[in-house]
Image (tube, rainbow over all chains, first blue to last red; front, side, top):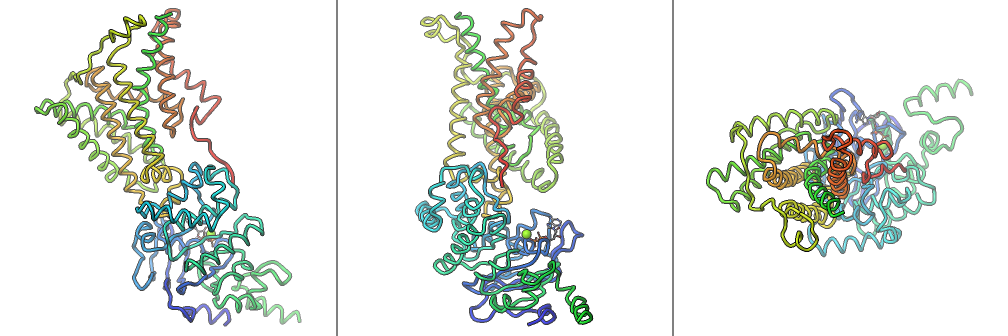
Length: 281
Length: 297
Ligand SMILES: Nc1ncnc2c1ncn2[C@@H]1O[C@H](COP(=O)(O)OP(=O)(O)O)[C@@H](O)[C@H]1O
Ligand SMILES: [Mg+2]
């Protein structure tokens, strides 16, 4: 498992069959800005897969390509395919995808600020119509996020960052998804709250059998909770592997876990960097 | 003193009619962020279509649902034909599109129904209510009071719709953050279509009441001008704001006309509400009831 081998087609993580398969997609914004240059990844049934990489690497774009929120930003998948449970979903609307069980929690949470916390959650159940069903879903969200129950009548815009993140995840849960695309849940939150949220993610994964594709810049935390990880750079997957193996990898340690001295560099610089190291030695 | 109350009540009642027109703007602005320049024309179109149907021989109770259906269809066509192609375009493009729409609709309605002025009788006479005159010595128009009641019922129904129903909640969600709404599976286009349909229905009620009062003619589109200060006062995205704004505009313009008018030679009814609205805007740019922009990360 090294940077060179990983750029080639990566196999789906072993064990469980893949529920989500992204196959060599290319994404272009505004008809000209090429952002993803052939990204492939797979999420196994019941897995937590981390999509890692620096700011601007293309993590959010990958998630939006899957949930098809891309079109609302004038982005297009111009090559490759996306399959969910064996069927192509590239051209489905977000509404159809949510009904199939794929729901995205967007970067920056995007709560409905002028709706109360509870109204946010109920809005998340738009695709479900059974009254009892919705009430049961609400109860379930409140058992996972007791804090939301306390804040249920507050306007979401006036709750804390952590509460907004919980609202956003809870709102997605209301649609009864089997797969959640979670974009940067740790962003701007205190470490303690980040742990709290990741614990809930792990809980949901274990008890509700929800699979997660998790975009994160916080590599350390993400690799602790994920089973598998992909590292994205400049719109390409440059490395992938089991979370533990990735966490132990020297280059990952050096560039993403901040365990070595010096500023973070990219894998593209690795060759050059190694050569220089050799010279210096 | 009873003269003062007469003016005040008359003003409040006509204010409710302003609210009704303002409400159409608020609905569309709330859900799609578009200031619909064509709202006044929709009011005119609704009134004209209703009169057209009655001239074709339909009774009042047959023409009402027929016009309602026409307005909903019109709303759907506008959403699909004008707004959907412009989705993701800058706000100003959408605004320009609604200006174009206003003129298109105006031409279309006159093409369909002709351009002569028509009367519209909805069966409520504009005369003082006897028992109120007898008991309180106030002359309150039966028409004004009925119109205000009809408008009030509509407003309450809409408020309940927005706060209690699944679709209403989705509407507010879309208004708040349409990307997030998409992400949780709310189909934007379906929601926009509903909003335009509802705005069409509101335009119909406004058109009937205003048409019955002023006659059905092109000048009806200018009731939109009455709604502007209401919107400035109440905020563009607030239903309670549209109501209170309408009441304030109605009451203040009538009182100003009667009590200040004589000193400045009269005719201030037309522009006084704008002055009032500008003063409010100076202190509260989002209007009295506009949603505060929540700045917090
Ligand atoms: N709507 C857009 N239009 C044009 N370029 C975009 C758009 N969204 C993102 N990009 C560009 O795509 C690249 C990847 O962005 P993004 O997927 O948000 O990265 P990440 O989530 O990893 O930080 C960035 O260079 C960004 O500038
Ligand atoms: Mg991102």
